[in-house]
Amino acid sequence: MAVHNKNNFLDEGTLLADLMEERLIDHKNFQRKFIIDKNFYKKNSRDYNYVLANRFCNKKCYPRKTQFLKEGYLNLGSTEEDKIEDPVEIIFKCCGQQTDFIKSDMPLAEKIFRVFLKNKNQALNTHKISQELNYYNLNNIFYLLSNDTFYGFKEVKGQKN
Image 1 (cartoon, one colour):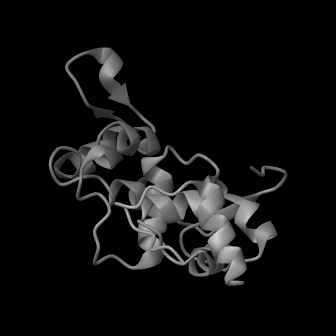
Image 2 (cartoon, rainbow, N blue to C red):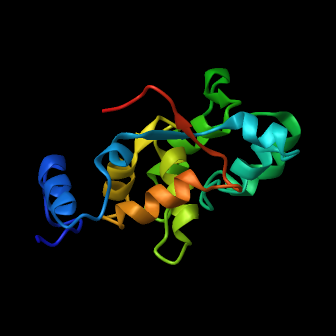
């Protein structure tokens, strides 16, 4: 099997074929897409904005976390139009662009959470997440997504590749 890392530019089909040949993943699981469910936080009496604000980048956003939580927005520029209320949007436009937003010493579930934030909480499958993390085991990623009780990962029904 080919080595899969960030320097090895394999297409999705090649990686899938290699992994299925080794029976590491179920093809149906590979296609399932997930998001971070904002309602999960409300149902579990957790503050969504607070949880996400704790992922703000150290350079620009985290020092102003208290301001964001108090005022409900962060200004990423100098105009009124640069005021952003959605913490996912803040992370997408600023923090997710930082090279240290996802660190190698973070737990895998935290890395997965940050991949969603970095991608504006778009529905993602295990392969896309694996690519973002330089090819973690797809079974491990799928297991964490399917059995999560902390981050609010939720399968998006009817959305497949």
